[in-house]
Figure 1 (cartoon, rainbow, N blue to C red):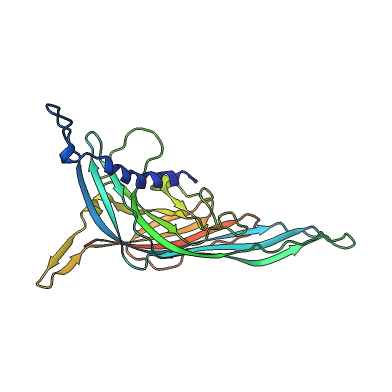
Figure 2 (figure 1 turned 120 degrees about the vertical axis):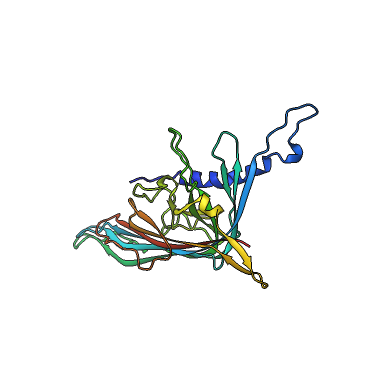
Length: 307
């Protein structure tokens, strides 16, 4: 099991590098002066991609401090984050060939669209208190106040970032592994409320591909909400085909689909990414003791080359 709050740093870094492209010298500035040696201009390759994303993540947590003839409370808190782009949104993937490296891969985040809804709820609320003749402890607790918030969704395919130092590893034949990143923008925030969902660092994951870059939240904060393996390499994305044919210029283009399923205790969630569209509902576990938490989720991603 690995729980990495610095997945946010990895995600932020992979997106922020895009800003560095503005510093790459152009062919017009490849010389520093008369007689000066020419500066080798890095080769830049980019591909425009359309992303369509829809899904949900839900956490259920049991609070149970009840005891016979003693003050206590029990309830189950559910927080659900549902989101969709509503249509294909354009992003740009750029590769800068830097001498002596395997290149710098950067990404752009789509514009905000669709919906991003956060809702919390309390079920099974019950209290216990002192038994007669001992006076009851007053006031008795009330259920946490849950809120619903609405915002919009932004998405991107970001390169996985290696966080741990060590020996250099060769880039896989399929290119750099890509993560599906989902961002929430707009709407109210209730990050520290009594019915707030899970925040960064509160969810752990079973060891697997790109675990260091995995991030899942169900709170209403703005910014990165999800970062999950898309089981896609950068080479496949750059090689997506786009063809126009016929007098009407009909478009024929490749379509990639991935289904990401999450299920498990909040301390050790299993993430599996499957090719294509997969039906079914993620398994949900039982909550039996105070503090038990279970997370489920399902996200469908469609990728095609943009016109």
